[in-house]
Length: 134
Image (cartoon, rainbow, N blue to C red):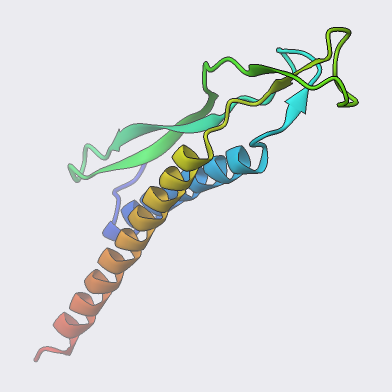
């Protein structure tokens, strides 16, 4: 972090990280059950990888998205000779997305985002109350 960080900047970074996490889960859900003709072409789930960011001047720490990485999960082979993408053996490769896991991921990211909104709203209210004091 190049300059001193405020509570609201920390909140913004945390909320942005949760938004990336939610978008990754949404992308995974959108591709659940998708098929490919080859194992290499099959969709693999993605995950946001977080990294801690420390502001040495203030001692405050927050989170950033270091990268969005593909999961190292093998797609499943399914026999479906009627599918237009089926190979000579009548098989297609199905993405290994677990819909339940992705829904849990989205709910958790949503809760974390909402918690940050609540914390920032409380901080704002406390600041306003402090300014009103005489």
